[in-house]
Length: 130
Image (tube, rainbow, N blue to C red; front, side, top):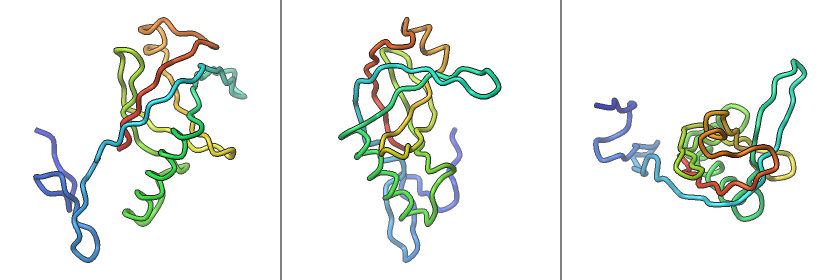
């Protein structure tokens, strides 16, 4: 059985300041296509990402703003928690805002291998915003 955080009801509602109840993890779905790109860090490590842009980025930004207003603060690095899916593979992670208005999603090696994806390949992504 999953435990609930303080202030969250059995019905999945969170009590906000003033007594208002709002749904927790409403689960808005955002879908987009994007190529996988590689970033190499200063320590030689490689990470693969996709970038959500346009309408997908706007939906994520609106969700982030709503969460910030509800919680009174932004998450670390301005991130938004998501459940991501590419093909039949899914995982829990976060998306991170970029200066240009896009949001980047890290794509783990296990997901890339399971879906036979490499740098430059176009991925069909589905995000459930949490």
